[in-house]
Length: 299
Image (cartoon, rainbow, N blue to C red; front, side, top):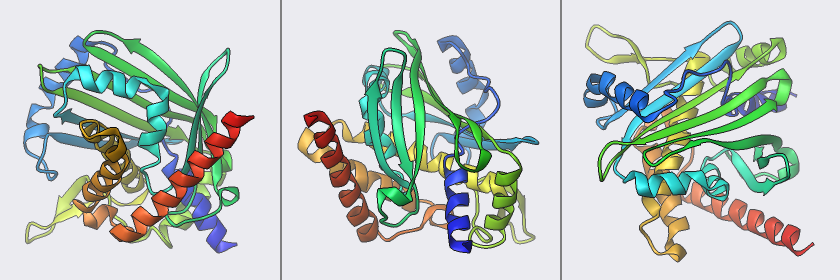
């Protein structure tokens, strides 16, 4: 029972992709202004790259956000992220996403995710989450996307994955990714259990203080969890975009290796699996996903 409890808690926090309404820029001018306001944070940070990450917690919700300069032109980034089918290629890179399928109905476009442990497991043991997918704004220099799920496991609700991107110049784009969710009493208790056992020693990215010798003291607790998953999903987007320049037959391997390399840049926070373990697991999961999709299409 304790093992199942900890696994469910991981899923709750992993899917913690959304809570109260987020203050997105809404247009190109506003997001460019945000880029200018974050100039110092994007220049000087522990990531040693133009990337800024922050998290926040309210009485009933959690939120994680990344802002990053992407070395890709908007003309490449925008169509790549707009296509709902590309999001399964992005999301499956995360170690806890076991399966993803995209579909459409008269009323909505949907992404169906199965989320579970960081190890190989049957789909029946994973937790299904159904996201509505919407292109909110698609302009010549600014795009905003939204994925929402009303319900999640253990009384969590109002899941959101919100993404906006703006053209900076002919070669670079500025991307803002937000995660948030609402949680009730059951999830609150589960969080406390997870953080006193499996998640006890795990770190986030925000530096909350420094020791006498200057060594950073990193965020812990539920905000640390949100920060880790925010980074994992950002790295998945970056890995997907970076692989687009490769021949189609080589893009999958390039995405998988780029995501793993990105994670291993921050071993204190993100190391969970060895490269071979991760690649073997993902090859099996993607093959299973493709088999299921082919079977569905044949009906």
